[in-house]
Length: 209
Ligand code: HEC
Ligand code: HEC
Image (cartoon, rainbow, N blue to C red; front, top):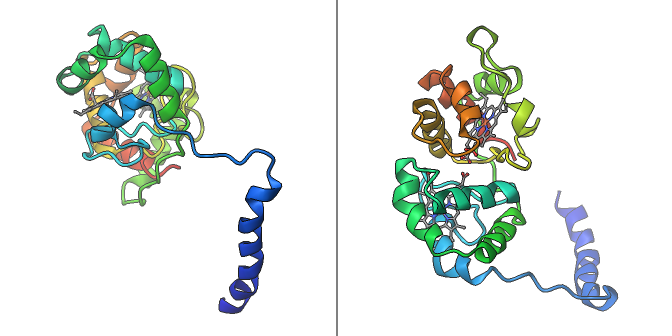
């Protein structure tokens, strides 16, 4: 293992030192918008990949229009589940539409969060995600969230999300306490899921990159 690596080292060094000279426009990494550094980072982290608690969602690589929709739903009070009301209502009320566009663009363009290791429930969760549960009227999650759970438009990315956050939201949809604009779709699905099935599918989703 060591020899080929050693032989590669000078080549890699050359590549790195050559990069600024050969590339026409050397790129500096974009800076996070001010709002991220004065507020969001405290709970969601600057790059959205390392939140402080499992109940706080990872925002890295999330669908941009989904982030915009959710921030507006917190701001106008239509996403009113208890942690949303407690934490995100005050935060979102301070945001203009321009702020919302800037922070959404920032988090959507960050690299996907690192996947979590598989556990004993992962396989059962994978079946729910890909096939649904026919006898309980549960459709395959991937039909809306995409085959890799990468999300798109109003359909959020679920890959690499925190297990506890995912389970909590499924419970909120089921009880109807999360009832913002597009939540009805998830209500009609979550009412057919047991707590155990929610955990299975959440444990699978967190392993995806
Ligand atoms: C004090 C902690 C805190 C701060 C500061 C904070 N958030 Fe949140 N955020 C949360 C919590 C907790 C939730 C989960 C709310 C729920 O369960 O409904 C959340 C949810 C969200 C969601 C919904 C994500 C999803 O997958 O549905 C978005 C988008 C979001 N926050 C963006 C932001 C942005 C942008 C900022 C900065 C302007 C910010 N948050 C600042 C705690 C915080
Ligand atoms: C018919 C389309 C559809 C299907 C099928 C579907 N979803 Fe969703 N899902 C949505 C939409 C739309 C939203 C956004 C809801 C909102 O804006 O409140 C969502 C939101 C979610 C969220 C909240 C994510 C967040 O960041 O807050 C979770 C968790 C979720 N879905 C899990 C699942 C699981 C698990 C399945 C399969 C059992 C599933 N979904 C099947 C359309 C769908």
